[in-house]
Amino acid sequence: MDRISLTPDVTFSRLVYGMWRLGDDKDHGPQHVRAKIDACLDQGITTIDQADIYGGYMAEEILGDALTPSLRAKIEIITKCDIVAPAGRYSNARVKHYDTSRAHILASVDHSLRLMKTDYIDVLLIHRPDPLMDHVETGTALDELVASGKVRAVGVSNFRPWDWTLLQSAMKTPLCTNQIEISLLEYGAFTNGDIAFLQERGVPPMAWSPLGGGSLFFDTKHASLLTALKDVGAAHGTDETAAAIAWLLAHPARILPVLGTNNLDRIARIGDAAKINMDRETWFEIYTHAIGEEVP
Image (cartoon, rainbow, N blue to C red; front, side, top):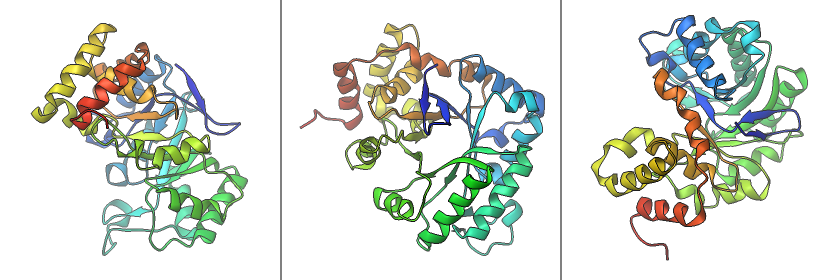
């Protein structure tokens, strides 16, 4: 499995296992969670994506119950903060909102460290742009976390370029990634400047929901696209899921897809995407099916 450097000291596996559905599994006991992580490690997938809000603020604890010191040493953990929803430890919140205050960020990190039973987080992301963000306060808090050793690197999620530059302007620590929605059903980032902005700066984007939440495979309006993906997958001894992910991997921006499934057989096949070396014309054939027309 290829690896991508986010900072001189932090590298991720090119494919990332996402745990946003971890709490949805009927069996989320430590042994079963370890089996999922082991299935990832068998393919060279070492990077785990979490967030404080996942599973109604329970997914981090589920992961923490499964971690041993030796297993923690084999993986990188991403987590996120700033979404406050009326659930879990925030059940008394009157309204869903964002909180990028220093106090909230520091408290969230301490919660995450305790729940995941770890001394450090590899990468902390601000989960959503906050309309009330004081960029100096937020940036200073992120710098403080890196300096403390609680967090090795920091980034953002769902930020637009102007959100990024605002926050970065108040920071000493370089932001290392932006996790945004990218897929064959959500391809706007390729043309609206989001990916170009990161690519210009040498910052690898992370792609959440890289399979379009599954609708890519079940909605009949995507039939021609699905057929094209099946053909590409079959030509490389794999399937349409691998082809859809390989389409993202082929982009020079060094996109890191975040894939979440609770099915052990599917987890074991995540790495199949690396088997496909997609050429330019194949990439555009798939893109043409996705947008529903020939490029201009």
